[in-house]
Image 1: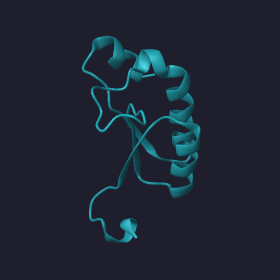
Image 2 (image 1 turned 90 degrees about the horizontal axis):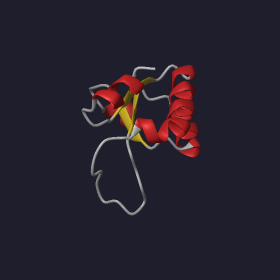
Image 3 (image 1 turned 45 degrees about the horizontal axis):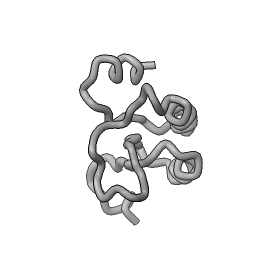
Length: 87
């Protein structure tokens, strides 16, 4: 329904969890943004720590790219995070 009514590019904000990645690949939104998520959080307190979560993030990015979904990462403006995110 959203795909038919939204007039701009639909972006799915999601955690880099395998079950959520599977849903995203089935739904095929034009774009997905990986964000840090924990069940106990009401809102995100900072960016995704790509250095610490690359084990989960990289496979999610690869699966999303394979499904022809554009991927972005919500990260802190830290030079190391930016560099690791480019890979």
